[in-house]
Length: 108
Image (cartoon, rainbow, N blue to C red; front, side, top):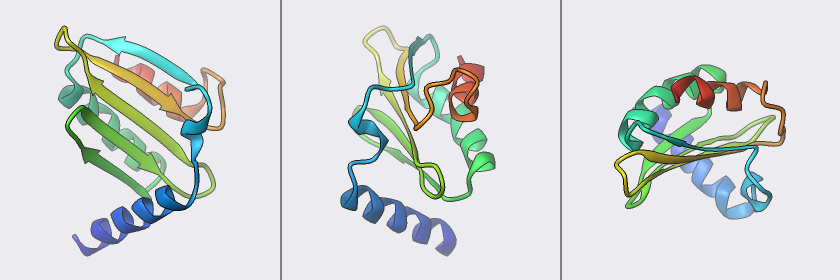
């Protein structure tokens, strides 16, 4: 629990100190028929496996998953009006084979 809290604090502080990958267009954007909750439940463990320095935070519009380290990546998973989710993956790579993008595609 302490480790997760520390990671969350580090991610929050890192987000405050830099513009991050969201300053550019997302590397991947799609609509899922899964709810934001279901999509987050699928994606969060995959991103944890890729980078233990991650945080998944629920907000009013949906979820935000962030990673820090050698590669900073952000996923925004927003609730859509049809009950599905609008997903955007921000990462340095725009390659569809990128592991962050590929993990999101696998949850579709």
